Amino acid sequence: MKNKLFLIILILLTFSTVVSAQKITSSYTNLDDKSCKTLESSSSGAGSYRGRCPGVAGYKLDLLEGDIRQTINVIAPNKKTFELNFWSFYGGFSSVGQKAEWRMKGAKPIGLIVRFIVANAEDSTKNTSYLMVTKITAKEICVTDVVLPGKTQNEEAQKLADAAGTKPCKAVE
Image (cartoon, rainbow, N blue to C red; front, side, top):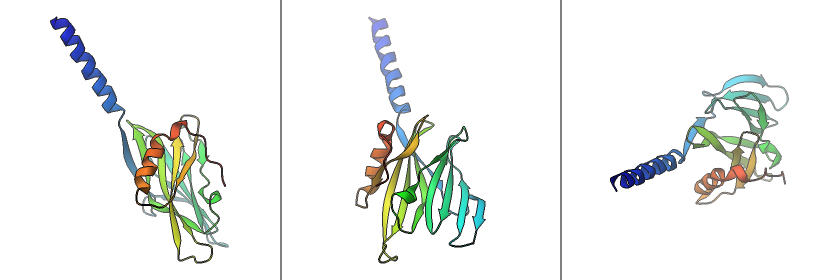
């Protein structure tokens, strides 16, 4: 009887350890000028910029700007570049937020959330702040969802990022 009880306790402890190891957490990357290394910069025309920002687990982020619009590329540990093309979703002048949120399952990123601020075409002082949700899998990194502004925007984006691995890439509208 003691052996059965010991075995049951051992199984329960093992199961609880596995469940807690699979908990999804957040890690953050700064996207400001101080944190990103300038790779290319030009002041001709509207200007352009490409900077390399730190990431997690061997991933890096490239911040790109051209024609007063910004986007992010994800650089995988194998050096493959995945273009997220934020600027293709909305045509107005745009910028990304100051931080990127990585959704992590253990030490492995499964999603990325980046704030994307788009200027109103009629009044550039009025902005709309979206959250761009990206899935990260071994074969694919792409935008799966765009979360509209609202009181629960951050929580909604996290839930979508946590489930993004099984979703298709979002087509540009």
